[in-house]
Amino acid sequence: MNLQLLRNFPLFEQLDDEYLTEISKLCSKRVYTKGESIFLEGDEGDELYLVISGVIQIYQDNHSRDVVLSIFREGDFFGEMALLQNERVRSASARTIEKSTLCILKKRHFIPLVNSKPEILIGILGTALDRLRDANKLIMDLTIHDVRTRIARMLLRLTEQHGVPSADGILIDLKLTHQQLADMTGTARETVTKLLLELQNEQLIRNDQRKIIVCNLDGLRNILDVN
Image 1 (cartoon, one colour):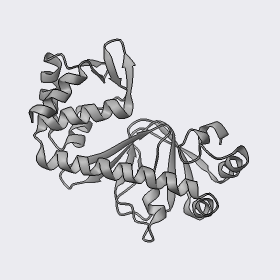
Image 2 (cartoon, one colour; image 1 turned 60 degrees about the vertical axis):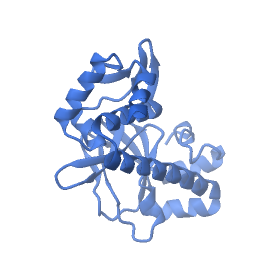
Image 3 (tube, rainbow, N blue to C red; image 1 turned 180 degrees about the vertical axis):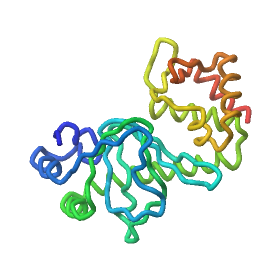
Image 4 (tube, helix red, strand yellow; image 1 turned 90 degrees about the vertical axis):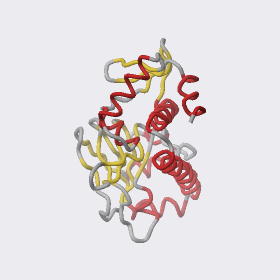
């Protein structure tokens, strides 16, 4: 695996070329097609995944519907909890949104890395804490706020994580269906379609080839203040 690709991951950015070369020898690479399952909740797992390209969604099956917990793309990693916990059981499922290329690192290789380079573990713990805070916010959104507020929060969160500047505002650089957006906000697809149209009529957002441009950040934030 290319050393510069490895250095793009926060876990490894402080490591020298010699150490990165050793890590690259331990990684295997796999290409997943769009919509392909990577692992399922409850599966045993002993692998850490590094996203080289593509988009991955982490979700839980709530019987009647999926609940999307996170979306990862190039430079992100996931699956670390199964490596750090003794039971090694996946707490959620993962599948691709787009064709994706992943680098896979086995636990038997990963643990010696952590033992010799503790800064890797510090990086993982920092990311885990950030994700825990995000999960707590998501729980609050799903249990306390109304649908309009949840959708506004979700759009603001996506602009922070996946936004790029554009002539009309901030482009959320992901192609997400209304069903996927519904799974991220715990609501029905029809409701998402209706509320996105309302936000578009209010000139807060607009669509651009299946991607959303946030035209008025302050307008979206005002929705949170009202509720």
